[in-house]
Structure formats: structure tokens, C-alpha cells
Length: 211
Image 1 (tube, rainbow, N blue to C red):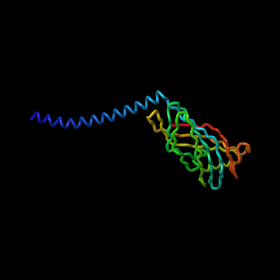
Image 2: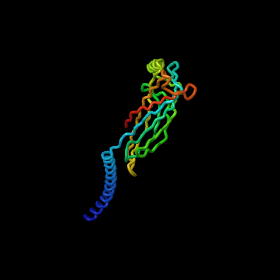
Image 3: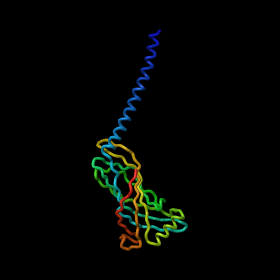
């Protein structure tokens, strides 16, 4: 009777032991992955990509009552992978323009991109918004800036990035890029007319990059 009970107990314990071994293997795998990510981050020290707003072409930027803004821009924005041994995947990127922290255009999708070591990438999306309601205090500020002939926009790029080290792809970080575009319509020499009521402004402004 004692031997039989021990046999039943052993059978149950065997099933439990298998489950424990599986759980242990999964936990061990997770620990190895986390340690690998940690070591890669410490040893290689990935650098943030550098973004430059190269130019902005203004097709339309008109404020009408009551506080409705119609705008259309084409921008050229470039990024550079500053790392020597790490590639960068850019996923789910989209760009839009904002004025005083208020989005004024629709988001324009940018194609997914893989950037090799020390490689540059360039995007030229079209950003537009038709009769977008803006806050009254922003409308007042924009009216004042337009009267002076100089206004400032923020070009925003959001998305995700992943690092590639050899055959290993790690991370999935939120990317937030903010570029200041200073548009000087008062200075005729500041831009180049590329069409009727269309002016291209060369900027070469370095952007802030945050994860």
C-alpha cells in the first residue's frame, strides 16, 4: 500500500516537474535576452540618430475667421545614423506641423526605413490641413506674426526605432523629433519662388530627438 501511494505521488510529481522545467526554461530565456540587451546597451552605447530640417516649401498659410487655418507645406528632413556598429530600423513614422503646440496639419506617413551604419536617409512629405480650427489665443498670436512677416512652426516626426546589432534586433523605442522652422516672409531674399505664391525656404535646422 505504501509503495503504491508513493508511485501515485511520484507520477503526479513528474507532471509538476515537467511544468517547472518548462517555466524555468522560459524564465531563463527571458533573462538571457534581457542580459543581452543590457550588455549591448552598455558595451556599444547606441547613439540617437541626428535629424536635420533642410527646407520648407510654403504653398499656403492662410488664417480666416473664425480662427480657421489652411496650410500646405512640403518639407525635406534628413536623418543620419551616427553609430559605427549598429543599424537602425524606423517603423510607423509620421510627420505633421504644429503651431504653439497645436497640430495644424494631418499626419503624413513616412515609409519604413532601415539605416545602415553612418548612413543618411531623406524624406520629403507633403503636409496639409484645410480650415483647421485653432485656439483663439493661437489665432491672435499667429495674426501678429503674419503681420510682422515672420512666423515659427514646429515640424514633428513620431514613430518607433529598433537597433540592429549583427543578426540581433533589439528595442522598440518611441521616437519624438521636433524641428523648428523659422519662416521669414518679410525678407524677400530669405526664400526662392518656385511657383505662383509658392516659396521655398532653406533652413538646415538641427532637430531635437527624444526616446
